[in-house]
Every structure is written in structure tokens, then in C-alpha cells.
Length: 83
Image 1 (cartoon, rainbow, N blue to C red):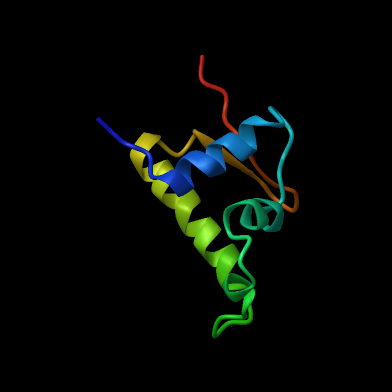
Image 2: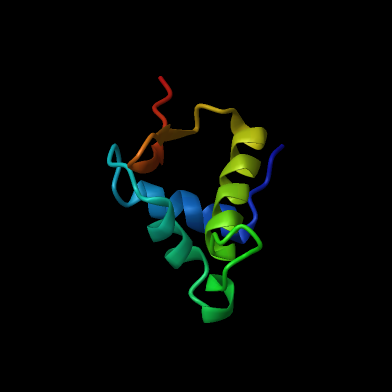
């Protein structure tokens, strides 16, 4: 059985608030990492919060399959549809 961490649950909850609509990664990052220290640039000039959000998405995909969160290029992420 796969269990969600609190951060993974928050991310899925944020995506579920707007079903079918892509949510930009930075908006997800703000919801997951409200602390200013998480917004300092990493070595590649991407805020740590964004990198951590992307890592959280990858963990969810590994646990539940790649189709649970869909990437919409240039727009963000949305929940996938399972029938």
C-alpha cells in the first residue's frame, strides 16, 4: 500500500481544487512552501520551492503511476483522468 506524505497530499489537494485545469508549478510551490527561505535560488537559479515541488510530483508519479499527474507543457500540471 502506498502512503502519501503530508506534502504529497497537499499537492494533490491543490490540483483537485481546479479539476481539469492546469496549475502552474510556481502556484503549487507557493501552496506547499510558504516560507521565504524556500524561495532562495538554488545553484541553477530556480527557487528551491519549485525544485522541491517538481520532486514531489515525481514521487507521486512513482507511487501511483505516471498518469496520475499530467504535465501540460507551458501551463503546469493537472490531475490525470483514470477510468
